[in-house]
Length: 616
Image 1 (spheres, rainbow, N blue to C red):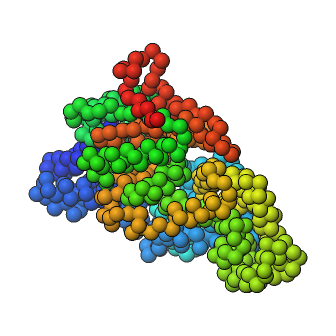
Image 2: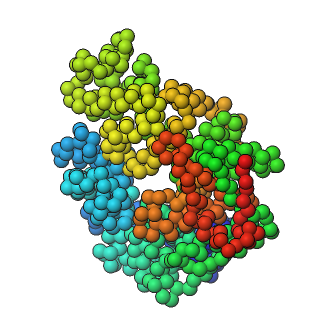
Image 3: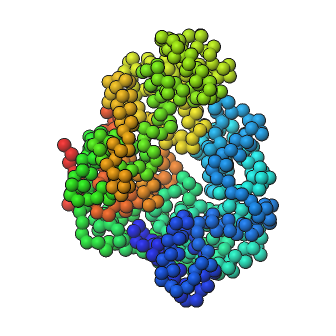
């Protein structure tokens, strides 16, 4: 079933289950696979209100939940005890750390991935069946020099999990699939048991989940999948778009039903969404139709720059609220979290309550605080908190050593002069000296750049001075964090000095929740969210780096479609005409290609699917 956005797919699944039960299918012969246990509980609760049958025996839940139930019965066939433990992300990180130590791999130079990043690499490889070497070559190039050691750790990690009788979340799917593949009698048992299999959000399944479903449904072919190819936007997590687009090839007798009636949005919003998604090459053709009456056309808003963009959005929010729109009924969506930086600051200035669903507030992120801590030392050498934070970024410097270094530094009348003396290095453990030397080089660059008022170059100097390697080793989303720091650099261009920049930053980030929020009720806050996060309920789209990946443009257009179809009544597209590049406003930007393709030159203004708002 191809269920378009806002078309009521949950209701369709619910009624399908209810129909099966009413027709005499025993609940224990039905499997309902979802991506959240909450979704399964919601559907089953609705079924109970529709049919007078105990459905407690129906198997419903996430793939991991169902897989775990089955593996508990048959773990012995795979070399596990039935009492195996499931390790969470933190447990997995600790075990990977232990494997690194056991193998004697040298990590002190910071050029080897941290356990959480290793876990991401191994997990992505497991869920996509792509070799670790290829994952690194495509997404983690900075670790190409240590592929051999990474492979050793991955193998050791797999062995240790077996020895300890534990599985991580990926193992549940992998082992479930292995059980069904390697033991035909077990596969037949569950294929007979689950005579009707229903799957929610099929466009988000990975290659292993699809294979499990194929194995279970291999005999009876009673497989009903519900999803929307136009909302397949999670390839970065391992979701395989081919699963839904090639489903009719795997099951040539399958009947395709399309839910094209949208109950959420106005006809004008859906018209624009339909026009956009039809530009994708691979898709099931469909056209969303509204049940709601005529509304207002979406609006395209060109603005001078991101500052005027933030001002426009904040002002429009105030106007909408003044017209009776509830604050909680307003959302601002963007392609990447860093795109919300100026808007966050503008909303704080105006006292507009907001809730961030795409991550923590921009200036509260660890990598932002790390970089600004370097700047704070240069601006105020007596900033103890900044000193201790920066010192602990270097190998062999922990809480105690950082405290000792600070104690010595703070005892001098001119801490900066002392830092550049040979005496300073004598208070640093020998093993930490190479890192602290790099810190001195960075600090010298910051001081020079600050004196020249080249604030936009400071974050880059910190990155190039060794912090980039720390980001790459510690975090799995290195590219996003570098984008954040570039945005921070751009933002600094509006200030006349480092002190002014840091002061304004502090004033913005020190506002308490009580001061910035007028209410504690989340329903009375504007929602700020990435498009990905909004789908689960980045202003620049497409994201340049996403276009470099195979199928990247089509997925970005699907993301654009998802953003459009979240809107119910009013939809605004904001576009800065000039963006920052280096220092100052000096790079013209064209509208998103997804906007441009909706406005061919031969169309009259009244024929466009959007109005244009002129901001003065």
